[in-house]
Length: 237
Image (tube, rainbow, N blue to C red; front, side, top):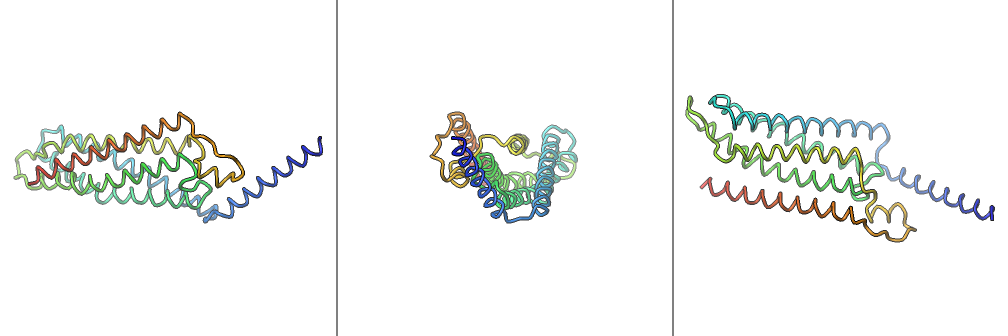
């Protein structure tokens, strides 16, 4: 009996060593390169969050200030920060994150937390581009066109910019929190890759509810963005 158990344990250890060797061989980056890319990813992500926080501060100033030059300067600065800081940092964080996933054992689709980050980041990037080159750019044009000494007005865009900047910070915090806690474990695809000999495992109710909530939030965000774009198009005519 003990010999059988010993053989079983040895076989199990050998299978684990083979799996570890396979995972290590599949890594496209050396340890030093992984650390360098991870450092860049963290730096870009933190910079992205800080830039959005600055954008939120300026949007609040533009909405609440009674000084014409402060309002004009706030919206013009928001446009510059959006074009030359937020958008580049967003793409840099996305690309380094994808490289980090593909170059390590995490992969893009093996773990739920990585998949969630990918979905949120790609979705946020698309909405950011629409937001920047429609709403923010229009606000900058409106304040630029206002006569000197008069109070510039951006209409409903003022509250819209504040709201969306606040939501962007909330999404970024969710993404960073997910990176730290790494919840939910392997996806079905990840289990098949890591443990091909194991039977299929039913997805937990908690995970299904979490994914459903995330899906609903993404749909709501898409609909809100569509309605906002329609409203903007109506006002531009």
